Image (cartoon, rainbow, N blue to C red; front, side):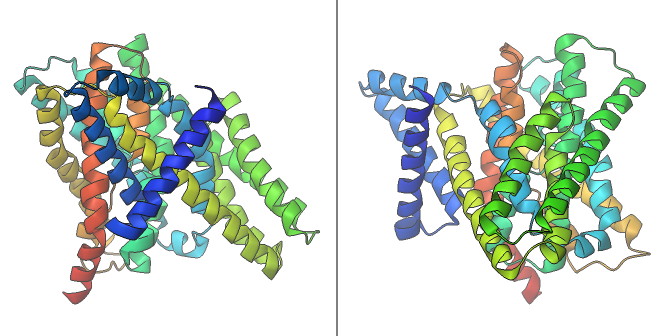
Length: 412
């Protein structure tokens, strides 16, 4: 199946499931599409047990032909991050800069070690023998709260603006940091790189800070190009070029593309929106990027649901996935509680902020993509299966109950 046929199939399935969700299921679109895709996948698996092995095999071949890691990390992610950052207000983000900064950096490292060590111990109890460094590798790939999943849920959750800014701001930045941590740990685990703090610090400075600098520079260039013109077609095309070309450039320079796109999106969405666009351009730009966001989200969550067909699950992997879920939530609670308590003396926080941010720390496609990016091995299959269990719980359970928790918090 070529790229055109595969794209046509994915778009058709996404549109069909979105329609069925709107008419029948009634969940937020992305979550509904993912749930229906998972149900379809499970039906195909059951059908395979009743004599339809050929059809199941064909479906599995199609899903395994999708390079999920490349499709997300080298394709859709740049557009989704830019679209999300466009609507984050810098003045609101600056108000919570310390909390967002701590959670997106030290919080990721803390979660990597807590979840990684805890998962390694749980794996051992279940008879899954993995080196400790692979436990840390799992901790690194599950540490980021996925901005794609988080922003999709926050749109319909009805949380307060203060909570939304904290969760969205953290999720936009921590995936870039987590990717750097993942690269460092995977280099040690898979390639035998030196486990030195200096090497990791150099990698962080080059990838994360370099990515931020590149995003700022590219965003400023496009801002200056937008300022003297008033033609929304040209201006939207410039933002498209910024995302596609900027992400590709960051990748070729071995800089953090996600961080570059977030910084560029913040600059265009704030300074560009205020000083370089007419009212018509703002409306057209918002409509365009909202549509891009919705379409790519639907396709992404569809693929996550279909991945059931491509992942090998055993009893031990399922048990590990179930046991790791509370571990991830506890680590998330601790990583939020510490900074909030530390900053309470200088900043006021809304009631139940720790509870809301803990439950709103949703894991998504980035975790699965990072796991799938590892070279084929027995360890990889285990990490992929366990990460998928955590992601499915996070999106389907945390995502669908976030609105209810927000309502209960307001009533309290």
